[in-house]
Image (cartoon, rainbow, N blue to C red; front, side, top):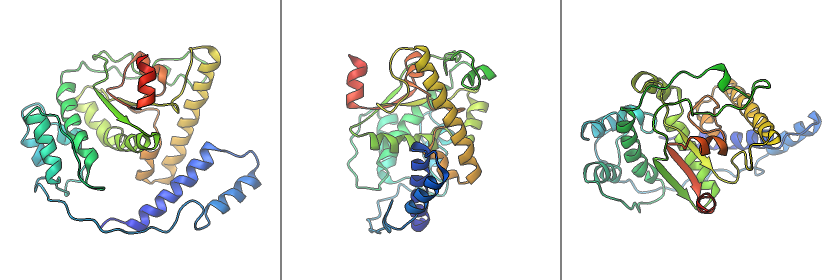
Length: 294
């Protein structure tokens, strides 16, 4: 059974951390008073409401079994997708049918199942299966150097992934009408592609490559030309991200990691980095896509 109360408490804590990091206060007394207010019941969240939902038919297969039934080359889905499914949890029938339709039958799909039925996995599993197959043929990625962390100090800006010799292209486009949905998808991709477990497999089996992904919305740093003042804004942004990630690790709550970007991972740093080296998976909204294509 899922820990509903624990999930509620973690979400409430995440919102508190977000407000503290996004809207810092100069004076300690004010910050303390605000934190005390945010902790009061009903300020940031209400007590959880539990709604029972129907049980969806199971495929009877876990991810390893499902991946074994795919054609040669797609089987590494079990490693690339290891963070999506717990080994003890079987795929729903509609999740397996989606994977089967896309990979085995080369069909397009439309998924219309209910809330909480794992619709995201219906497109994410075929996508990761295809990336697992293609990435097997990529050239090894050179190790990053200290210069990659260019924001530490006064050095010149260094592009995030131009050092990788593999073909650079957007391999999947995920479109959402609202930024809130973009943020939710970003959290899922961080869990799927930017954890230490997946990094370890990619280092061993894919020559240190990463499956890159990036959010390109109005919230993405940095807009405009690559002028010095804009570069300094990006430097400050990446410095804050790095410090934020360090603080999050001290809390020792793995679930919190998925709500914040890590600067040493596969998530793209900025618009400039995505323009110079397109991410494998691009997440955006309709308005921003229209601007990008103009």
